[in-house]
Image 1: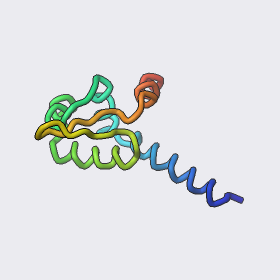
Image 2: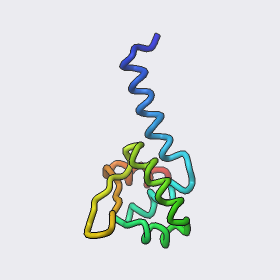
Image 3: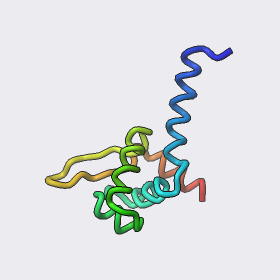
Length: 92
């Protein structure tokens, strides 16, 4: 039988993998492998709409896959951990 801590750990893992389970989110993560980008740059890199990018970035932040940093009037997003880039590389 699963303990409460086991259940919490499984929920965290499911949340993490939810971030990888969508082609649009994967496209954003792939674009961020090159370094920090703002929403406009991600729109150009992926071909997704600005609102679509923003929605997926919210999910990716919630999943712990990206972080954001305010620079002047723009918010830049980056991979939250270098291991994410390695995982994407392994998936190739």
